[in-house]
Length: 464
Image (tube, rainbow, N blue to C red; front, top):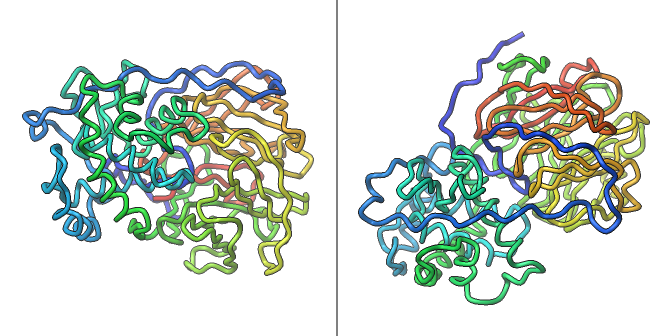
């Protein structure tokens, strides 16, 4: 069996479409499991305090910064920079825009789009990043502890330094704060500069309005551009304690596809597959090592949030998408061109979908994770809209996942923070928390979970 070391790569992030960022940080103490109340699954956590002021021009060239996307800017980024440069007129960046700046605007735009938000949200976010950092992912603070594209401050509750220099995390943190301060889509109207200021609470409130024009140019150029992040590589291990992959590297699909996994044929082993958020198409394979999809089909709208589960207990997984707060589960086999569906509303729009066999009855049910407060809301009967078990695990904006860690036939939850996988080993029904953790891959990678060898236990993998 091939043993492949996971080589370190720069701490930059491939966008995780419609999922929260892979973030650094320490595992927070989880709250005890409680029955969720009928009116709502959990309160929104407090909004962070002020971000730092814009990086002064005299410091901009001296501060250290890092790439915003894997591999750095592309030729396409350079082409967009050349396209928009003649019309850029903002005082912060204007006609000095280059491929690196565009790559940073690109990761912001794709992250916002992946959440299913209107393009205006991307304009607001890019306006803020131009104003704060001239689209630089600063790893060195120029004012107090301000870091990253949005000059967010760890001391004000925005996140850890590692998180704030992760562009996907930083963008999601900004968007989360905006949605909290502008509920019910009220950010869709009103002055963009004023919206930026209310989120950032800047000492220079008038600075944002001057950059809206340039942000609009960039987002317009990027919104429907085809992202170019290369072929996905999967590094999988059969050992939950292993820090290196124990299986040959699989190259399957390409970004902006996102990884999924499932037992599509009922043979007891999971295989990796992909979902393309730009088209809403799933690409399923029982033999992904050959790079070819056996079954490709569209399900739901573009930019749905994908999930996988065995809905009928036949031992074969199927797919689903969450659109808004509605979970749509495809009940016709992945091998069939005929489509049948069941659906259920559960949680709220900001939550992320999960599916697992929580009680060991052989059937998976949908549940939810709230990235705003790191709470899981688990139910064996989601059709009634109520969570049976609600508990916090990990930090906000972690990347959630599900698996059967001990082979008892019951699924449990986990989170990835930074490059560390945290597997909750105590049952979802208990307030007692036990955890297994392992560092695997690096922060830029996307987590993927599955039973790769058919031993009844799930283990970790990453896609990069």
